[in-house]
Image 1 (cartoon, helix red, strand yellow):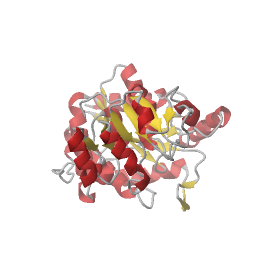
Image 2 (spheres, helix red, strand yellow; image 1 turned 180 degrees about the horizontal axis):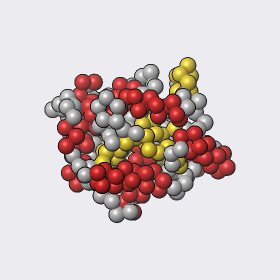
Image 3 (spheres, one colour; image 1 turned 90 degrees about the horizontal axis):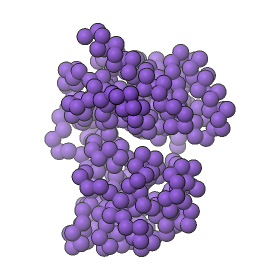
Amino acid sequence: MTMTPRYLILADGAFGPFTSKTAVGCIRFTPEQVVAVLDTVNAGRTVQDVLGFGGDIPVVASVAEGLTLQPNVLLIGIAPAGGRLPEAWRPVLRAALDSGLHVWSGLHVFIGDDPEFAELALRRNVQIVDVRKPPADLPVSSGRVRDVDATIILTVGSDCNIGKMTTQLAVRAALRDLGVRVAFAGTGQTGIFIDGKGIAVDAVVADFIGGAAERLVLDAAKDADIVLVEGQGSLIHPGFSGVTFGLMHGSLPHALVLCTQPSRKTIRNNDWVSIPSHKALIALHDAVTTPLRYAPTIAIAMNTFDLDDDAARDAIERAMAETRLPATDPVRFDPSPIAEAILAVHEARLAAR
């Protein structure tokens, strides 16, 4: 993506911390690019009112109202399971395109393949960007990343939507502050919107997920000493474990950062799957990485947004006591413990060479 966007984010009826992952990510990491959120439920409030962060970005009720703030892109701000376009949103997309807005989407259904929207975009000379559309020439993975000098770090999780992308972006900022050459490899639609490049691996045919991860790492490693790969899914998720395996085998990380949420005891929308202890999750990831390239878990990133400060700090202390690893909430508190653990791995690799 080459243009500088000014987003009107579409999250109508679904704007919230768990229901609009793309909107939340862009507001957190690129707020200067967000002019408004379109949500009739919360219209008249600010993003800060709804999310607890984001400042005075307004929530508006229509495309017409949003246009007064001079956006150039309508960004679809949700990432629902299955990735379908809500039927009620079709008039909104028509209004946006007819008003001269580009439409950027991370849905599994491709907006640009819709004849009505494609014709309208052509007539108004605007673009529809479907970032989940994968490259056509992906290979299967073959371990080529073993030849790169960069240290590769992958986030893994106890569940989906738990902070794997957020952790990597927060840690990237901390490593940059330390003067490290670091790159982010975006593997999901939100990370791609934030960083401007990447491959949405959950839209890649299963045989080529590893190849997509391999390509991302090889590209990122050209100009970086540390590559932070955005994790997806979870090894214990009944629906989304496949993408996790593909990322692990394709990126061949040197180390892992485990992302968890203390208050979450079962997999979201799959309450029959209990989330194991930190130690059990670490042992599971040890077993999975060992055959190709052992990647130890070196830190715990904890999503404590729904706990008060005392409870959050207590959960972090308990995780450190259980695992003897550094732990923190990299958004609420400080990402430095994770950044320093990653830097220690990198420096140990340099010393060994």
